[in-house]
Image 1 (cartoon, rainbow, N blue to C red):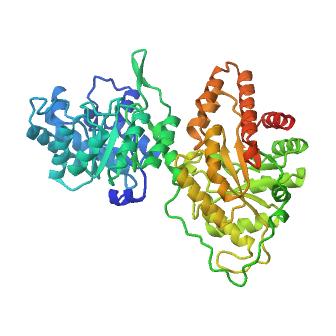
Image 2: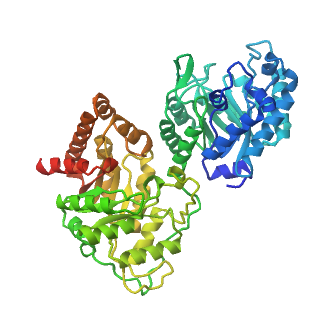
Image 3: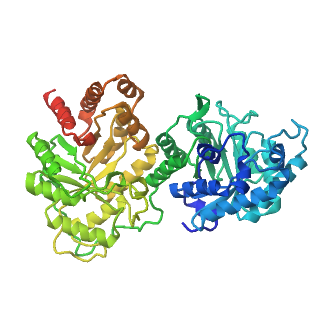
Length: 613
């Protein structure tokens, strides 16, 4: 992303703002009785450091440290004559840290006094104060204005008029909410949209006041009423007073989960307010990447079938696993994560144990959560040769361009691997090498098309290869997707492209899964359900907040909460997994059981329980 016209970029992208400035300054030792805006003059380095931390966390836009830098508030600190200097320097500091890769939003907050008809300050006086602040921000080099945390619609109206008076930069108008979903002056989300649209705001939004759940409820009402971009920037939940400090208890992971929901509901801009830190913005950045890893993928379509378009190998003849699936056998597979280094012996020993317990296949993910590990095809080849059990090898389009993908697939087939699970892959920003470059020439739908080509004996240019490949094509599907309509449309495209079976995200909520199955059954391809044996309450919270679609229902969370010891938690989690399999077994063609923390005893206990029941 190069700096340029903000609104043009916004048309096709979700934009991430930074988090709280005041929270970070306080965390860095600035007392609450200080004027935070004045730090632009007296301690510019600490302001720079906060901006830099948000840029490094992945923010697309950073806000100037000028939220309260208007004449009324600065006069209360005895520095009313410094309005222009504080705002101008605030913009320059942010501009220097943003560089050419981020935008700078000039932050303007309420005046801190009541204006007419509720106070003695006139609308013209208010407008003049906002105009004074906006002019200095414009001189300092901002790319847009954000009018934020307003309670009074009449006051934000004066701010909009003031900013419009001095230039044509984009204007974001943001109101704050109470926990009843209305502004402190009693205005509903519907009224917010109507008035801010009428007054010419380019972007309409909500920030501060409440946590993400209440804002999501309001957003759901607002999206139906406007075509203008909507922005949501909640607090990190409600603050609790702990030993005299206001502590925001909503975790970064929790905020990231709601970031996904905001986007799926229709928000174009997300960010954080009070209590959010660079850690939160980094998690929210990962959430955006996990939903929309790339917007400029190469279209891969099946061309007109030429004379070299061959019949594919019949599914039962592709592999032992394919034969079992075709014969209607209930498949059991266990996920085995590759090692972080070069020593594969532990993985081989684990695979041997699983084979001895009649597991049908080993499922090997590739770089899960964007962590650097041994390549899945390499470990799959070792396990197949040394243990004699077929792997399902994950293959992603994150790391390779189209040329590399085809080269890999020809080589993987040549060494005897046949079962593939084709996925887009977690973006590098989620992992331990966030500066690594993702490729994403295509997504998982395009990847299915590529393999289907090879299964028909041609490459993407329609050129014949020496013989057809015999890949069994598997894909992922998410029963708990926030936007299930979109998920099922994408899945339909995967099936049309050539998918032959599917594996789900971990299933915890049977009711959600059953609703999903009503729609899935129309596709008439085999489904293997993902199962994750929970081992602790923290593990359950992680699945609920960080894994898209892995909704852990309240009753299961409560069971894990009641497990007071590690041993009881593990047994509780294993029993939940067993119960889940028993409930969904009539609906699926098999299960894939994960192996938390690499402990093979967990999936074996689950398998033993379902085999003897």
